[in-house]
Image 1 (cartoon, rainbow, N blue to C red):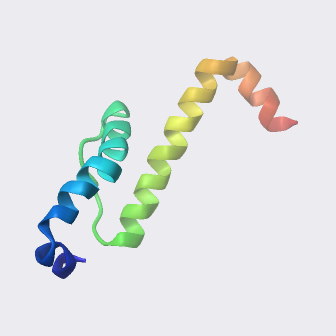
Image 2 (tube, rainbow, N blue to C red):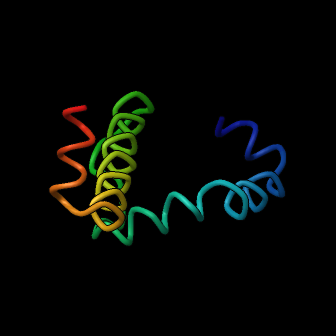
Amino acid sequence: MQVRLENDPAMMRHRQQSVEHPFGTRKYWMGSTHFLTKNLPRVSTEMSLHVLACNLKRMMSIFGIAGLLEAIRA
């Protein structure tokens, strides 16, 4: 990946605008500013946990905690 970015610097600008901003914003909202792990599988796992937490937080605000627990049990 690094070699491809070095060969085409414009690709990194495009990637930052199209992909990294939404994920970075979501992590910032959840109180984290950078990944705590290294290598793609671990970062992927960490991001998945952030997305899960964000989705649960959103569901709690929509249904309330009791409504969410009821929906999970159903």
